[in-house]
Amino acid sequence: MSYDKMDDFIKTIYNVFNSVNVKADTKRDKRLKYIAVLILGYVTKLAKEHTVNLKEIDDPDSINLIPFFEYVNFKDIKLLEFDNIKFEDIDVSKSEDIERFVLSHVYYITQK
Image 1 (cartoon, helix red, strand yellow):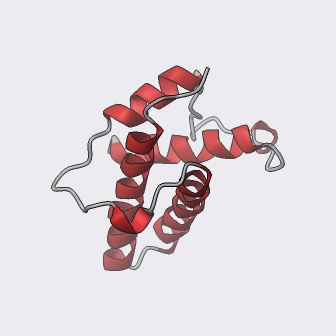
Image 2: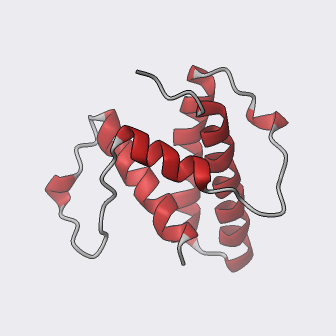
């Protein structure tokens, strides 16, 4: 079974990237910039796989996070708790672990 709202999810993640990227540049925060680059890599890969042109996504007044939560729920992704994360919790050779890591960052950043 495939997720039928992938375009909306990609738009949400791309909008989160834009927001994080601007904030990182404004604050000159290298750590936040690395997170933005991580999110961009993830969303670029998804956009390519689902033929979504990221350049056509409008910059909204506010980010609709409903597609994010629906996707996480649909895929049954267990987000990481960064306070308790261990090195062995993430296997960078597994795309699902990378996705979990990126989406955990998205969640953490948007819930601040």
